[in-house]
Image (cartoon, rainbow, N blue to C red; front, side, top):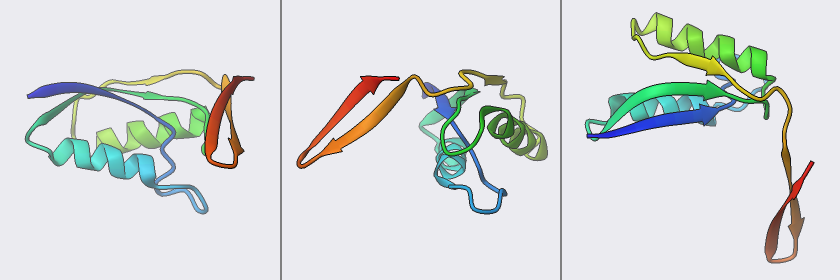
Length: 91
């Protein structure tokens, strides 16, 4: 079994927010090949504090003992899209 950490900005259950990170958490939880050891939250599509509350609520509702830790409150990198190229710049 592979032990993993998911670093995310979950917005599941929040009107207008993306649900991709919530889906990633759900898929990791049901995979027999994975053991989700830690969830860290960062700023992204969802503010960090809100993402942390969402992740903690999910873990609590499922009755799991997976730690949820709040991380960076601001993005450190930004994506720039150029034709055929994606570049990361420090922000």
